[in-house]
Length: 370
Image 1 (cartoon, rainbow, N blue to C red):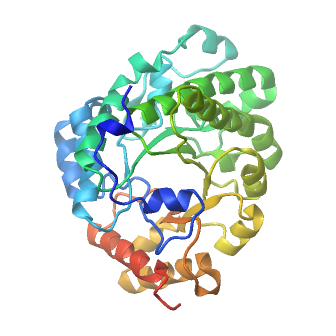
Image 2: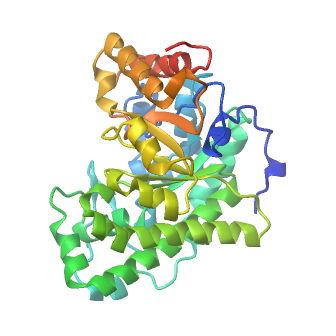
């Protein structure tokens, strides 16, 4: 097991302080999918290597994780390990291809499939060792410049992919499971949650300093269905991760939950989910979100990713507006991590990404009058 004694000391703890709910001199900022297709250097790697080959090769995963940190030196306050939420279904025994989006050649169609197509036991130390190796390698390569984020997908989102066989506009197949086989659905969700929790603990042991759970399809569930099906598995992950870290004598790490589209559930998530930070999409305003969660959690987000296509004037205007909304009264930011409301998209000009980061530095600073 890796320990913090093995790694270079952290030079920038802005992200971790904000995640703990502290006031900061400016908002820490990073971007979901910051290591991705909008970067020419990432495209060069992908010309020679298939997507999951990059994920499974620690040297390549480290390289692409570091690409945005190098390009935007002094502007990004975190790195996030290059991987994919679908490595968990792969660890469970399912085949996943990127063609270019996720494709499962043999999805789960009935509850019986969950018993015959999935591994009964998943040893994450074996099946996901490549992720842990990439994290440890990346921690050393970062030399303490910024914290390293580890992550996984949420059980509901993974369950949806595993049943639908890919993305979906209607989610008919997976919702058929929920309504026709509710108990079998709950069992599978908790089975996935166990693997997710063990995977996250392994990432901390490998060197991850903050963890994020991505529930990308949370907004596809009615509020009562989200509470009935997704929330229990999210609670299970946070509780199991915290208990496992405490049992092995490891210090706690901040946990972030990004339940995209589940803005009506913010009060419930803040009170009962067990996370330190809640990610926001762009469809909720900061004052409303803060009112919903009180001071129980930090918030992360939440600029519409498409603002980055609007030109410099629009980027500056919208970043200024976002910063003002998270700095009520114009004071120093507190318990806020700046980010987009979802991942950056492939067509963004890398220099517009740079300008976004520069604007966050400027307008989130406690020295800037808004």
